[in-house]
Length: 311
Ligand code: FDA
Image (cartoon, rainbow, N blue to C red; front, side, top):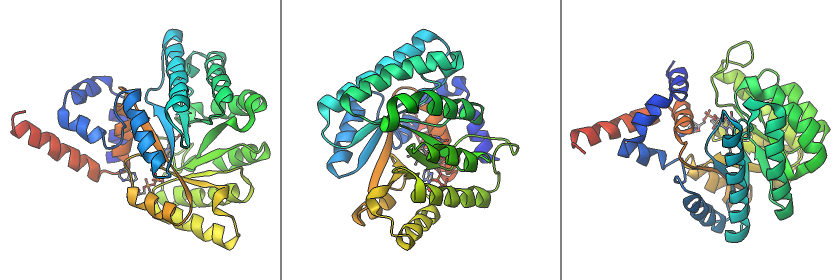
């Protein structure tokens, strides 16, 4: 109930305008978002890289509604690639969303923008991950990836599978078939029972079995989770099957379970943090709150304290 309410709120721009004005809400957001500017994101990436942590930079923003906006987002991603090349020496790549590249305006628009990004990334040898969005985009994302992106750019670019979707077991096989690089996550959107498992236990079971397929037959899969049960299942599986730590990586979100990331890194596993930045942080923040309702209480208390102090 709380989760679906927060996910609903994540789509309300008017509420964002209100939240944005609140200093403590912004401060709370800064726990999950590496600032509003590219400079601040580069600083965070540099610090993480210096600790041996990989980074995937994500320019926040989704669902653009005209071509100029999509081209603007494309050019900003190209700028990120340039800054990675000029300012960083560690392992930093980028994550993007197809709706940000113009998917709502058509597959051709999104691919044209994505292609420019990938051509640029290719010159620099930087990997690009296409995030997975709500289920209305899943088929188009996987088709575009399989039919157009992967044949031209190979493993310079990877995609994401969400374990809450009923279709994911088949999608994983379609991606393993072409030796694609896949990030596995549980899924962050509000989806109906017709397309997604609703019970936590089902989502977790699906996660473990998809993860095992990727660890066995996938191409450098990314196990993206903060759930210790998923991490433990992964560790047990790789030990049992003698899968070397360097054949996959763990991924987590910036600001979540730093302790777990550190523990895995110290055990010799590759780890990467997904580091979002930019002015469009509200939907992202609301999805993070939906994942952990106790965060809502923390934020509400902070906002109340600020109001009482009359700031
Ligand atoms: P779960 O939600 O069960 O959380 C397990 C534990 O982790 C919690 O009990 C809590 O301790 C901690 N935790 C989780 N979220 C927290 C939070 N916000 N604050 C504090 N603690 C928290 N989704 C998607 O649909 N498309 C995508 O492309 C991506 N990409 C992506 C990349 C990376 C690197 C990660 C880690 C995740 C994504 N996701 C995503 C989000 C993903 O689908 C999912 O919503 C979150 O990772 C939460 O699921 P967990 O696997 O962490 O388990």
